Length: 178
Image 1 (cartoon, rainbow, N blue to C red):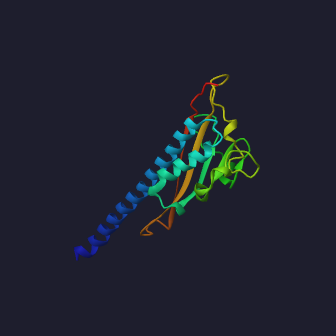
Image 2: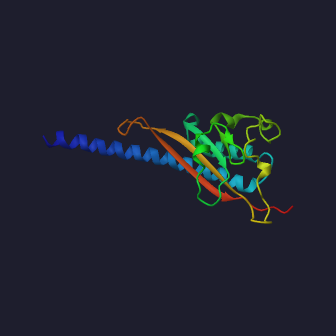
Image 3: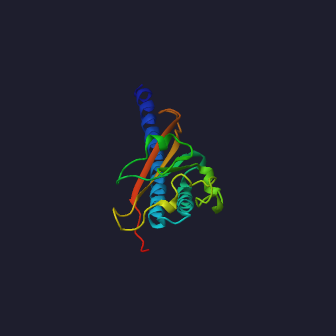
């Protein structure tokens, strides 16, 4: 009789612990990907292909994530450390002029000539990397942020079907001598 009461509670706890472990695994993979992108963003500075390099760093680092679960990547211009992208950037599917570039997982495989702000068709045309300030004169270098959103599917559906996870990292662009 006791087993009939204890067994469902025991299995619910075990499955709950497994679910939390899987969501933490996805969150750590997400955080690692965002930070890898931010490190590349900082060192790339105003390089014409900075966003291309950032996306490749995120692609490499996110190998623990199923790529079809990556919903959005935003490279944006924050005013200070810790600032998230604006609601307008998060809602956009392409970007906002002078503020952010928005990417999808399909952009990981785009060729280099789709970047570089050379035409109005380039993927990074909204916040062109060449406009990012990377010198110490005046107010110093710009901040650059990388934000990502993924969906985590619940295995047992005890907590619903999916959970949306987001993370961001803001870093100052490393200064360069010109």
